[in-house]
Amino acid sequence: MIFQLDGTPADTPFPDPMLAEREPDGLLAIGGDLSCTRLLHAYRQGIFPWYGEGQPLLWWSPDPRTLLYPERVHVSRSLKRRLRRGGLLLRLDHAFEQVTAACAAPRRDQDGTWLLPEMRDAYADLHRAGHAHSIELWQAGSLVGGLYGVAVGRAFFGESMFSRIPDASKIVMVYLAEFLARHGFAFLDCQVFNPHLARMGAIEVPRARFLQELHNATASPAPPAAWREAPVTCDRLQNAKT
Image (cartoon, rainbow, N blue to C red):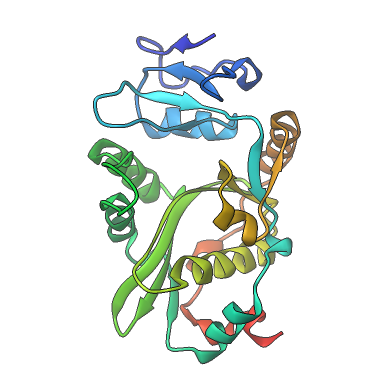
C-alpha cells in the first residue's frame, strides 16, 4: 500500500516501514515536503526520499537494507598503499554545498540526476541545522572526492558520493568508517546494495533487523562536537598504518 502524505503536517509520523511495497521494493509513501522536520522523522523511521525529475516526491524503505558497520570496513592492500602515499587531505563540513553539487553532476552511466535542486536545498537546510554533514577529500586545494549524509543519534545515513580521482570514494569511506567507529556510531546506512559497497565490507540485513538497530542507535545521544575534528592527511588514517 502506498500512503499519500500531501496535506499532512510535517511532524506527522510516517506509516510503518514494514508496510512498504515489495514492487517497487520499498516504496512506502508519496507527496509531502522536504522540510527538516519531515526529513528527520523519515530518517528516524528508516525512510528516505528518492525521486527523479518529473516525478512526485517518493519515500522508500527497502528490504533488505545495506549497512556498513564501521569497525568492519575492508581496506584492500592496494588501497592501504595509496593511503600511505599521502598527499590528500580529509576534512569535515568545510564545503557541504560543493559536495552536493558534485554529487548532482551528470555521470557517464546515468541519465539525469535524482539530486534535484530542491533536494540539495533541503539537505543544505539540514546541514545548517547541524544534522547533515559532508566528508571531503582535497588535493592541492581542490575538492577531488566526497560524500554527504545525515546523522541522527548514533546512526549515519549516507546519501551520495563522488570521485574526481581514482580511489577518492574509497578513501573517503575509510575515513568516514574510522570516524564513526571512534565516536561510537552504530552503523553507516548505505540504503541499497552495490558491488563497490560490498567490497568495502557492507552487508545486506533484513529490514526488521535494521529497524531494531536503528531504534537503538537513534535512542542514543549524538556524540558531542564530533563533527568539529581537524583536517587529517590520508597517511594518518589508522588503516594506512596497519
